[in-house]
Image: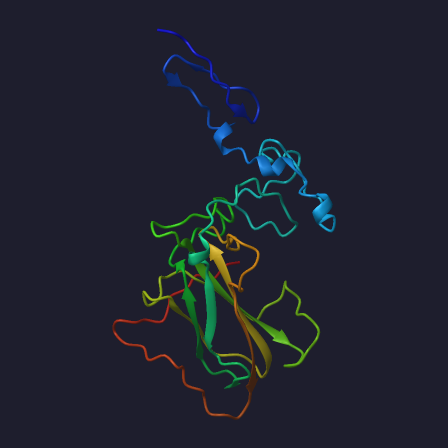
Length: 260
C-alpha cells in the first residue's frame, strides 16, 4: 500500500496521515477551516476610513495564549475566550424581538407583581447552558431550519427620568432573569417580576443569547436590532395593572433560572 503524508495545521505541531487512515489530533486546525480573510487588514485605497483589522494566518488559534482564558466562567476581571463564534444564520432567519408588556411609558403600581412579555422571531428557544460552568464555552449553533439555538435574558435598570441622557451603569440592575423555556411555541415568552418594583423610572431590555449565553451573531451588519428596550414608570397608590396575557392550562408563565 502506498503511503501518503497529509499536513494539517496544528496548535502546537503537525499531524501526519499514513496510508488510508488519517490521524488528526483534537488540537489541530484543518486547512479547510482556515479563513483567509483573517490574514488581511481590510484596508484598501477605497476603504481608507476603515480601522485595520488584526490579522492571523491560522484563525487566531493561539490568540488567548498568555492571557487569562475564560474557561466557562463569568470572570468579573475580564478574560480571553478562545472559542469560535460558530454558525451564523441566513438573512431570512435573523432574530428580532419586541417587548409587548410593559408598553412604552406604562405606569405600574409599586410592589405589585407583573409579567414581562416578549415576542421573538427566528430564535429556537429553550437552549440554556449552565452559566456557572459553561459561560461562552461553545460556539453559536443552529437548528435544522437554520435558526439560532438560544434563549432570552431580560433585565430592568433604574433611570434618572424617562428623558434622561445619562446611560445607566451596566453593572447594576434591579431585576434579571434568564428565560430557559421554549415559551408558547410561537416565540412568546414571559418573565414574572414577583413583588414588583419600588416607585421610580425604569428601563426593561431583552438580551438575546445563544445557548452558552453569548450575544447572538447575525450574518450582515446592515439590519434591524435583535433586542428591544422599553421605558416605564412605577408609582404608589394606583390599582395594579393587569398582565395582558391570560394564563391557561396550555400556556404557563415561564419558570426561569437566575444567572449570577
